[in-house]
Image (tube, rainbow, N blue to C red; front, side, top):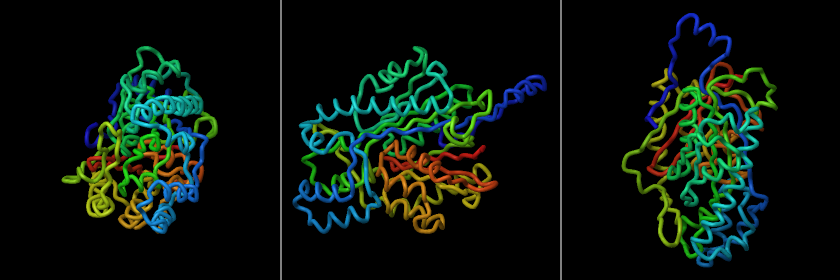
Length: 384
């Protein structure tokens, strides 16, 4: 995507303008969003017990403190713990990823399309976001068949954007919607299936505390529905997408990523990440907002992906938000953990569940961080 993509303004003749007004076009809109999660639940107490056995070189008190301070009360995981640990190598883990990811991507997409009042044949573009497994052909091929999408649907896999991928995919989808295309964005991650059993690093321990599994799907379209729908039937309040943005922080490539090898996908997570965000994030967001004539004071609702309790606290400090004030983000972290690219979908869903709104005249800002170190932004305006 372009570093900063504002939605285009269309110039028309008076006659075309009148016709357009009758159709109520109002730019790219987030029409519906739905999530899907596995059935197996792991509580904080379960996590302490399991990790104490899996990481015998760590002090039990340290593990207990890590879990207690993580902000994660429970998570959904793709398979029962015994079945996850029985996956012997990357081949088996990746096979499980493909099967289970397709299941939950399909569920989330079906529910989102129904909430938006759209049939599969109405979808013009499918953006498939995931980084916790490797599929070639990409997951969107099987997903298209499962959903019954048209053969000419544009398919765009986004595979290496990490936790930022959900916002990146929604931003790309909004650009397609602005051009008049109905876009379905599906983010699915099975972080626990990517677990590397022989990795005794602190990064792997933190991943086992923080990450969960699940999928989210968002429907983006360029015009309002032909007839007004209730909030319930339309998948939530209509949210107009005003702009998207990207930022690559210099000299931060080491902060996060995967060590990819025969062992699979080994998480790399530098402990300096919160300090890097504290030093560089606010200027990047301020510059993004200034390009659209706004300041941080114009943002009434911040939706930040669940990168961890400390990351959320840093964000709150930077923008003068009371501790714990990122209500949707903290709620999503507590209920589901970090779902990598799908995290932002859970944050949007929690904001809707909690009835959060930015307030009169103010905007919503969605933010996610990924490898690079990078950040993706989405600026929205509630329509209902």
